[in-house]
Length: 207
Image (cartoon, rainbow, N blue to C red; front, side, top):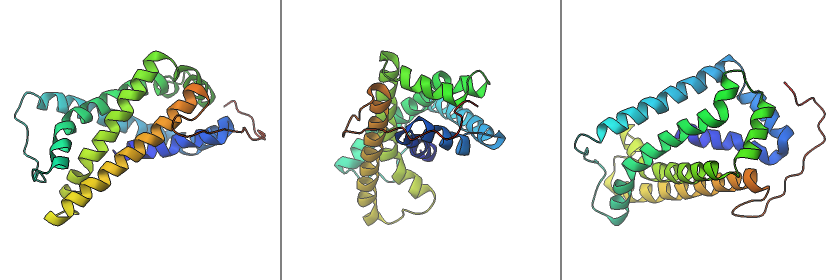
């Protein structure tokens, strides 16, 4: 959940143009520490997916926040499938777009060009639609439980407002992700118009 939001914030640097995206990725997406973190995240998503699939065999665990409200019922209905699809989509996204860079077969520039050329194809559009939808639902349904787990949401009166806030956050992240995917796919914003002007590139793009 946190990684997805941070990754989206990082990738929004694409609206500064190709050069701006490359500068951002060289700052936060390069080096041994970044590579180790990426590996940890991928392993975490894989473990999360495996555990989630195994949990389908057992009984559904009771949500300590469930109070029977309409929003609580909606969150309970989407929580498990949204988490599983989010993990699966994240792994596919990493394998298709980032694995070549991890293995040293592609530079950041080549990864950027792949984003621009592949996002508009049908398989990647389907992956983006499923992944962004699932991630947004996962945030909406999972954030209140996460706050409860760390002890930040104990009051019964705060639970419904927390669900409303998490739902709004999920919708916001969905809109931001769709806007970015639409720009990569078509060169135009999906939700609102956007025009990206490439700055004069004062440094070489190749790594």
